[in-house]
Image (tube, rainbow, N blue to C red; front, side, top):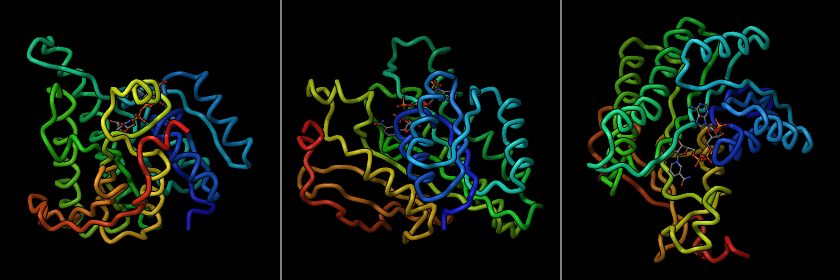
Length: 274
Ligand SMILES: NC(=O)c1ccc[n+]([C@@H]2O[C@H](COP(=O)([O-])OP(=O)(O)OC[C@H]3O[C@@H](n4cnc5c(N)ncnc54)[C@H](OP(=O)(O)O)[C@@H]3O)[C@@H](O)[C@H]2O)c1
């Protein structure tokens, strides 16, 4: 299902984005990695190619929308199709009442405005390309589903991003545009490479392994899941759990309409240190 597809992954040089890009490439998708630092992009690309995948790099900052539009156009032109866009680049920063407002707003622009504007552009650009089905997967966060400490910029940005995506999806539905499909992934804390020191020093609560998060992304993009909105996390009582959230825009505020699936009851965060 993912063979010979073309995908752009923002923040594809490391962490969750690199995990998703590698998994897509291993299934035969041609991946284009976007991030700011060329050296990290080259390393990521070589790793994917070394395992037999097809990867190219496009250095860019996602907040530079014009550069991003150019990348999208060129990838589409070069391949004749664009099948998957992964809105993954984003970052948490601790922000409180003492944080200057300009810094809070900058984080909102990065975590909300940029992915929303990109998705809005993709929806407008591809709505009339009926032959091209485009799947847009956005990596959100548990912070979109609950208020978290010290999250003055990040939390509302992720909440707002989900609200924008549901409204955009509702517009597509009203206009009977069926070739653009949205998927959202809400991870709890993830054991990415960057997090490992904090995990070793016990500064991080209940991290889930990266593989389980990547599996959700692949299952979503393969249309193998009961809904298009999935939270994934580790819970000490149950292990690794997927929570299927409602994807119909009409059910946006009905978060009680969820179902859960334990995907690994034996995992504990100690396994990450082996
Ligand atoms: N890790 C977690 O525990 C966790 C939990 C829930 C949600 N999330 C979400 O998952 C996503 C990925 O997080 P992660 O932890 O995997 O991140 P990460 O390990 O810090 O990697 C971030 C990636 O994004 C790129 N990037 C950063 N700023 C960028 C920009 N302005 N333009 C383009 N690329 C940029 C980075 O490369 P450059 O720095 O070279 O640009 C890198 O490739 C984020 O949206 C985050 O909010 C993460």
